[in-house]
Structure formats: structure tokens, C-alpha cells
Length: 142
Figure 1 (cartoon, rainbow, N blue to C red):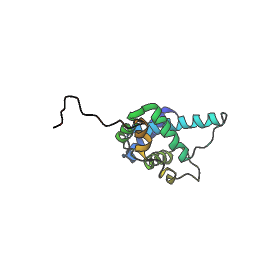
Figure 2: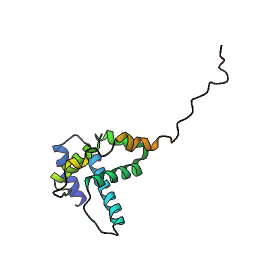
Figure 3: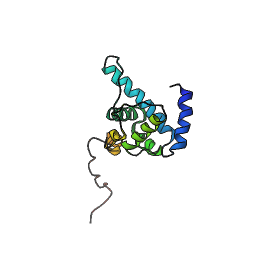
Figure 4: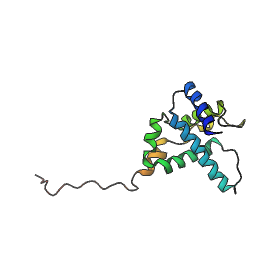
């Protein structure tokens, strides 16, 4: 779909459901393109339908690649707090004709995908815990 058509329809989506910011919808669209390219590459250039679980994996990879440790903060700012929110965004876009689905696709495909803290925060934590701080030499024990 052309950019102006996406923008015009997105305005209607946003008027219908205000839970998520415009950026969330634009991000999901970009993540879908990213996921399609990745799957096409694996399938020697052949395009195919992407499942909800595949899209969730692509969303995670794309988000970490694009936004790094700021991913969780940005998603929360957009109103996205769990995988089910991505499903709601996708199906809002489906219902307005911006994305397509098969008869096997449903919002349930996005349930229980991954924990946001595990997916978007944990990759940036140190691998090994720091040792406890030792008392400074100027501190004397009694």
C-alpha cells in the first residue's frame, strides 16, 4: 500500500482505537517488512504468509536492532506492554485493510509470546553479577 494510503487509513485506525500511539503502528509495519525480508532470505527469495509467532520473533529482533536498550521504554511510551498488544495492532490494521490474514490467523496467535522484560531488558543486563562492593579503605571497623 502506498505511504499516503497507509497514513490516511492509519488516521481512521487511530480514531477508532486510541490505546496505541501512531509510532506503534508504524513500528509494526516496519517490523513486518523486516520479518518478510528475513523469511524471504531463508526461503531463497520466495515470499509467504507470516504467522503471528513469526511476526513476534521478527518484532523482537527488529526492535532490539533498531532501539537497543531503549526498546522497552519506547514500547511502553507507545502503549505497548505485552505481545497481545501487538496482536491488537495487527488486527486493527487487518480490519482497516492495511494488512491481510488467512482463515487460520487470530489474535490468539499473539498470546503468551514472550515476557517483555525478558525479551527487551534482559539482553542488556551484565552477563555476570558484580561482586559486592568492598568497604572503602578509609572506613574503619570498631
